[in-house]
Image (cartoon, rainbow, N blue to C red; front, side):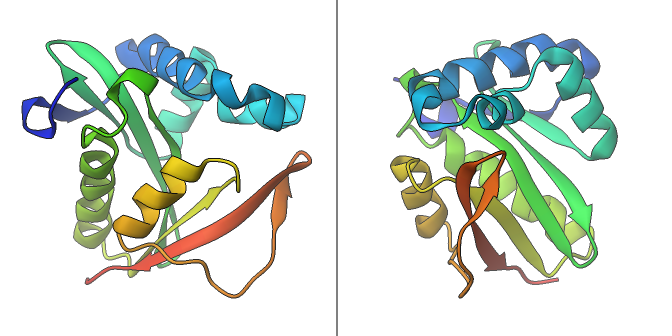
Length: 161
């Protein structure tokens, strides 16, 4: 299993879109039955949709020996940085990849004057929720919303400007 210290985190370029789409697909396939079809399609996006996301904000990848193990994207929303497209390959989970990617997003948010990070997740992504909580994210007092019928809830983390 890769270690967090053996990772390279870098900004993704258009040439990385197919690898990012593959990570998203492989990371969420085990949960596909828990999503609505549209909800899963909006989560495990294809390479063309990754390119669109890259135009909306930065996307990073985590690599080890040239292999993409994880990805995360962010979009600026007023004083918040919206974290999305967070995925780590099943074989790399628990190795620090997700924490390193979240740290990258937090550094970007601080450097760009955002006061908080916001993300949406599904109640069934238990290990991701634990990662977010260990990273300082908390659920505000608001109920569930949904992504094409798949339940979601919001998590937030204040960051120092």
